[in-house]
Every structure is written in structure tokens, then in C-alpha cells.
Amino acid sequence: MIPVLFIVIPLVSGLALFFFKNEKPARSFALFSSLISLVISILGLTAFSSGQHLQFAVTWLGFLGSSFSVKVDGMGQVLCLLTAVSYPLIFIATWKNQYRKANNYFALMLLTQAGLMGVFVAMDALLFYFFWELAVIPMYFLCSQWGGEKRIQATIKFFIYTFLGSVLMLVGIIYLYSKTPEHSFSIEAFYKLGKTLSYETQEWVFWLFFFAFAVKMPIFPFHTWQPDLYEQSGSSITMVLSGVMVKMGVFACLRWLLPVVSIASYRWGDVVTSMAVIGILYASLIALKQDDLKRMVAYSSIAHIGLMGATIFSETYVGFQGVMIQMFNHCINIIGMWIVVDMIEKKCGTRKISELGGLAQRAPSLAIFAMVIGLANVALPLTNAFIGEFMMFNGIFSSSVTQYNIVFTVLAGIGIILAAIYILNMIRKVFFGDLKNSTARATDTGWSENFVLSVIVILILWMGVYPDSLLQLTKEISETILSNSDITSLLTKH
Image (cartoon, rainbow, N blue to C red; front, top):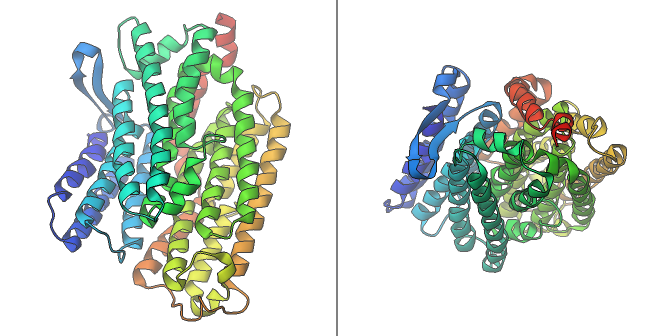
């Protein structure tokens, strides 16, 4: 019943919040609901970690061959944990933020959480699509109602991209469903069918699914909605978008794309990896030139996700392990960066790097937190991102299905160097040097800010020193994905 609780708690809480009248009880109730989800997630990793507690299935739309089938495997545990950890951190970090129609705001945030959890545990293609949309629809209303002056234009662009991707994915799901012998949406039926599909069929099904997943990640050139939306959205909305929602695309590639259309994934692997590597370099170079902190972090996120995309199509065990652990690490690091940016804007009244300087003199605690989180974003050894990026580079370099693996490794490595340049340059300009007018009256972090940033730093150091705590969870699922997409045996059959 654990996966059902992951969905039901935020879903029911979100619906209940629409009937709240005052902001304070709505805020407190949303935080309480997110903490309950976190407790359930921890219990799913400890006291109730046996298989019977981590799966649930009941007939849903029996006449269509669809069931409400949910399961928390290793990858699902990692992603449900990162979602459950993220929401309380986001709510506490933005506790003092004021929202118009706060009850609607928190209701939509929790409905988004329910959709995200559903995506990560769904074992039925139609159910997966349902939760995919459930996560996106409330996010559309969040972005369009709370944000900057140009939020409507940015949200419309986001909607067009995601709506088109969702429609194409639905076409692919319906086609695969029609070809299964038992007319079933179950993931097992799709996996079995994938081993019998011709390459020609796999090829166009691959692109139907991949477009939807690439938009969500996003991978170059499907990324153009992202910087504008991140810049115009409210801080907590941006944290959910970049910390959790982009992982839907990465997760979907591992869960639904590679095992179902393995040959097409192999044949188009070099093309997709090239797109991802171009995105790493492109986003990193643009981040170097950004004067707006939000846009710099947005392009930084594109580069980090690009590395995950390139690693997925290297199709190696160590690469899959690296991607799964890095999904969690990237979530923690990018949320930490957004919290730091939000605090800087509140304390100084600006996000422009050129207007900031000497902030460490007024906010030394914030400077220390920002330095640790910044170093984690450039994968310094003993921080959480180091082991994930090391494993991903290892996976790309050792890939036997990628023709230009060495070239891809070198080019992706340049992105890491560029990341160190723009992150360290930002920290130098914002926190050190002479005080400027915007920073002269800044104050240091308060108790709630210190608490959230301390938790993030602890997670960064914990995962940097003891990554095996997550790697053990993803070991079995990495082997399963690799066996389901065994290119050698599949090519022999075809």
C-alpha cells in the first residue's frame, strides 16, 4: 500500500486545500501533508521495505485492459524519496512568501506532487499517461497565475511543447496497446511486445515517445521553453520544475523507452547523445554570459540534464547507476541553488550579478552555504555530484553501443570545466569584493533558511561520503533495464 499512499496523501490534501479560507492554516496543512509523505517514504525504505508493501494492483478499466498497478522498485524509491524530501524543504524555505489565493496555490502544488508520485510508481501505460498529465496540468495553472510579468507568454510556450509531446506519446501508447496479444497496457506486455517489433516500427514509436520525454527533461533543441519559464515562475514553482519535474523525462527514458524500443534506441543513440552533448556545451556557454542569476541556474540545469541524457544512451550498467543516483543529487543541488538565488533577491532586491558584490560581509552564513552548494554543482570530490558524474562519464567512455564514445566523453567533460568557471565566477562576484548599494543593507539567513540549507548541505556531504546508501537501491533495476535492452541478443533475433 506504500505506493498508493504516495499518491493519495497529496491528492486528498490538495483537493481539501481548495476549501481553506485563510493563508496560514493552508500553508501549515500543506507542510504537514508533505511531511507525512516524507515519513511514508522513509518507512518504505525501512520498516515496510518488503515486496508486499511496495506494490498494489486492482482492476481499473478492465474493458480496456488497464489496471491500477503501482509498484515502488529501486528507481521508484529514489525518485519518490527525492520528491518527498523536496516538498518540505521548498515549503519551509519559502515560508515567508506571500501568495494571492494561497489555498489554491498550495492545493495545486500538492496535486502536482500526486502526479509526480504516480508517474514514478505506475506499472500500467495508461495509468502512467494519466499521472503524467496530472503532474503537468496543475503546474500550468501555477506558472500562469503566480510569477513575473511575462509569465503568461512563458507558460503558453511550455504548454504547447508539453501538450504536443503528450499527444504524440498517447498515440504511441495506443499503438503499442493495439499490438499486444492480450490488448493490455501493463508494462510487462509492452516489454514483451518490444522484443517482437520490427526496426521500422520501433523507429517511429521511438520518436513519438522520445519527443515527449526530451521536452520534459529538456534536451537540446527541445529546451527553449525552460529558461523563460524558470525566470518568470515563482521561486517554489521553479524548484519543483527543475528539481523534480524534469526527472520525469529521465525516468521515462529508463522505464519506458529503452526496454520497449531497444533497437531503435540503439540505432538512434549516437544522434540523441550528440543532441545531449551539444546541449551541455551550448547551455554552459550561455550560462557563462548570463547576468541574471535565475537564467544562469536555468542554463546550468540544462547542461546537467544533458549529461544524464547522454549517459542513458550509452546503455551501460555503471551509467544507469550514475544516472539514477544523479537524479537525486541534482534535485538536492539545484533546489539549493534556487533557494540561494531566492534569498539573494529578497535580501538585495536584485538578481543581477553586476549589481551585487561583497554579500559575504553582510550574510556570512549564506556565503558559506552558497559555496558548498556551488561546489557540489561542479562535482567537487566528497560532494554528492562527484560520484554520480564520475559514474556517468565512466558509462559514456566504456559504452560499446556508442560509436563516438571517446569524443562524447571529452566534449561532455568540457561542460564540467565551463560549469566550474561560471559557478565560481558567480560566487566571487556576488559574495566577495567591495560592497555595492544593493548589498549594503542585506541581512544574514534566519532560522528557517539556516535549517533548510543545513539539511541540503548534510545531504550533499552524506551522499558524497556514503553514496552506497542509494546505489544499493538501484542495483537491481539497473540490471533489469540492461537485460531488457540487450542489444546483442535483440539484433540477432532481428
